[in-house]
Image (cartoon, rainbow, N blue to C red):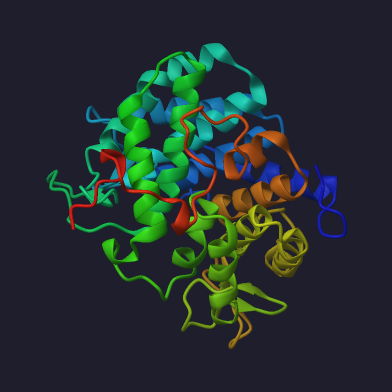
Length: 360
């Protein structure tokens, strides 16, 4: 695996070694050595390890999740050295296991491991679907006392659309049909594509801009227009993508995720260019600084995060055409035969059945 003119095989190998060096003996992958972890970024780093053939380390990461899963199917929002440090239960964090597991299976074909993890995936999926609102969006967390917040986030729901598609693919592969999941996924996709008013206004954040595409819900002319509309707001030529529109801060992970979204729309040349820009964040150890404040010419924060490196590896994989990664981030191949399209454009969504019932 390499990216011509941007990263060599040896450089990518060094980045993978950097991620592996952060992994703890129990399998957990914190943001950096001595730092905390969240289940979403932990899974992203495990996906990067899998891409380098380090399947044993990736399976240790998934077994760590299995050992820490709550009875309701969730995980807590943050852990430090195995101790819970944030007792909120974020739906998006819980859902992303599905993406990691399907990616792992596509790479390894390890049937036994997928079967072993199926009860954990099933419980995690039920946790997030219990948070789905009548309009299809998914409320973003349960608080420490178990109370479900009333609000949904577009970025999180977009990611959960991808996760539900992967969960359905696992279910289909194992012969465990889940028609309720199919209905819930269709309703969620409809909300993401056609009802922005159902989500909290986070338009300042670049993730709300590109995540409907990254999460595989939005494609076609509507997706192309969405990218074009906010390109100058979020992209700093020569540097990368801003995290927040009104801050002079570009970040490695958002830039790599944007690159994957661009690839999904057929804009691979643009995607490679963005990935090349953020090589300025690369450290000699192969890991990447989280971000760069360009007005001050300063790295900030002074953290080289495993998940930023993981995002880089995943972007490199899709741009290189790696089949498992292109499947989970864009292709229909390998998804369950649910009748759901790969991506929805607003005109493609019909609400003449209970699948897309609109309570408004």
